[in-house]
Image (cartoon, rainbow, N blue to C red; front, top):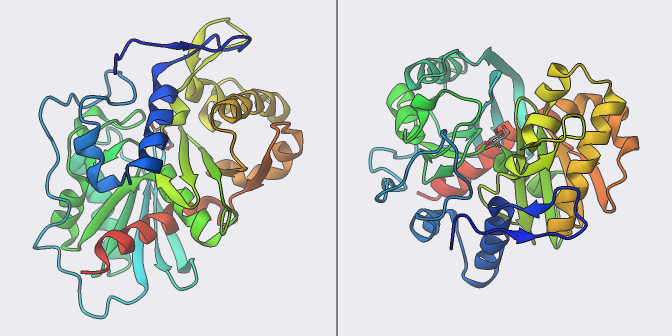
Length: 333
Ligand code: BGC
């Protein structure tokens, strides 16, 4: 596929549909007709990353390491408990997840994301979280960037030195525990379609997570289409007239940066959701991330023409979903 090609969207306030959503649509097609799975993504889409920016790991040859490691044997009787860790641009949260219930067992712990978030510094925090829980079992980790077979391919709000790092290896090295890595928004979506607002929903369900970044988890009949990255589609900034990354306009950090009232931010966010709606016609859009605590301030103001719901698991969806993904991918060993 030609990286520069665009398809026009007549009457769209955005003007054109850039390459990223076009490739996402292509990948939905792949998911539907070619049994697309995260295990094969690295090979099929090696040359067609959804977008280019300086925070993208350049793929010249397969960077993909084996999906699982012989040393990552699961402890016996690992049962239904998995340590979930949600790495964010601002904070790193962890909690023990009971997969039978889809809830945290006890309190979660939150530590500041180190700056710069180098692999060593991120490894220190992960190791501190595992130590806090005296954890010796399976670990699931959500990361705010594209993940191909546990390798970090993009890192919009994290240090660039993380690009190309095999995070599962790093977690294993620092904790001695078997680990699985997934995009943070994919994780939150997985939690919601398994236990929460998206449970049992057919058709297209989209989870949009709003925090330091803007992330998306795209599902069709409960199946994840990984790394959709819809927070990086381009939108027109109505104030400056410039075309910007949606994340720079509609994330929670953009709301804080521009000192917007919830009403003003809700308008921007609604425009963003309507754009996503025109691209994917979802049955349901679930809103997750830090803003779920303030749902009453903006949910009634949304006019996107499909069902909307707050993530039932709130800001814990990322932790729970990372644990679910780990169990799905490593738990059968
Ligand atoms: C990243 C996504 C992530 C989102 C929310 C974006 O900047 O590119 O991968 O899901 O932030 O954390």
